[in-house]
Image 1: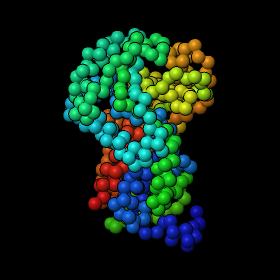
Image 2 (image 1 turned 90 degrees about the vertical axis):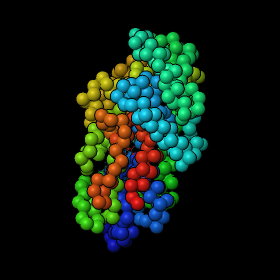
Image 3 (image 1 turned 180 degrees about the vertical axis):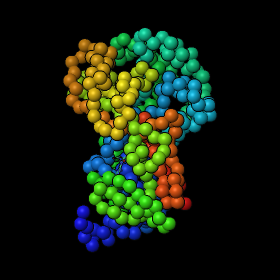
Image 4 (image 1 turned 180 degrees about the horizontal axis):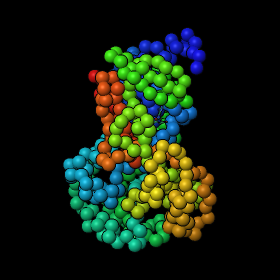
Length: 371
Ligand SMILES: Cc1cc2nc3c(=O)[nH]c(=O)nc-3n(C[C@H](O)[C@H](O)[C@H](O)COP(=O)(O)OP(=O)(O)OC[C@H]3O[C@@H](n4cnc5c(N)ncnc54)[C@H](O)[C@@H]3O)c2cc1C
């Protein structure tokens, strides 16, 4: 790309902070840096025309763990670790709501539900048995019982007659959240260049040289917020995980309201406008879904359709309107990796399926690595 004097002077010179990735982490990191260093020059590079990872693709659950997820986490983490993880998700959500405002992101507290398959007696009994124990563990955070059991009022099929209910779970409009974050960043004077993919970087003593698909330049500090794509630039324990989603056409008098977790969280669905959004099924084909390529597969999309037909919307006529996928960053541990990698390079990656909840906080923590 043959850049002009003006382009180089205005966009690509004397840059204090370059952030790779304009997802929820990159944008929050940039905003926090601007707050800490108001006179700094901040540049975000984004490979997509729109943010092109998970932040504009997700389901918009403002959640901190279903009952079975928390019980499962307690198998591999200490009580303290599980408590801290839930607290982080709760704190992250309150930071997101404070930063953008409930009306802007259309935060709604309609409650969260966990549905148990008719045949999954073992998991159901486990959750019933451990509910009080989990409520007690989380009481210091919520000052009330989080989980209770409710009758199947939405008339779902092929599930246990009662489901677990989380009175504190909410939902947001993902598009509105990302639009507001982008606007806030631009209004603060943060520069965002789309269709610009960072291909490599080389650290010198004072500066980091960056090579993109369009141009090369240097920056004082480089912050990498590329989540599921992290392995292309840095060597950290993050694997890509594709997640597929569909949305139905509008359904007349849709009676289902809330966020729903099904079959140990392998599937999730919610109402959005007067439609149903349904996602999940990665466990049907883990190996194929461990990819940085967007796409949908017959095995997963047909299972999602079957769930709609037989379980979620039995006897209701519906059509599928949209299908898409997003790429998450996952690892063996559930925690994000936020750290300094070398003198002038930092990363905040591996947000798993929790980025709506913890993304604002991880972005802030990434910025806070810089003194
Ligand atoms: C289908 C789906 C449903 C989900 N549902 C929920 C949910 O309900 N609740 C919840 O809390 N979380 C959910 N998540 C997870 C959540 O969306 C993510 O954890 C979060 O968006 C991660 O944000 P991020 O900024 O770290 O990464 P991303 O949003 O992936 O941002 C990384 C950005 O980096 C860019 N990039 C990558 N490499 C380069 C490069 N070399 N050069 C330039 N740019 C680059 C990408 O294009 C991308 O825009 C879901 C995820 C998916 C995919």
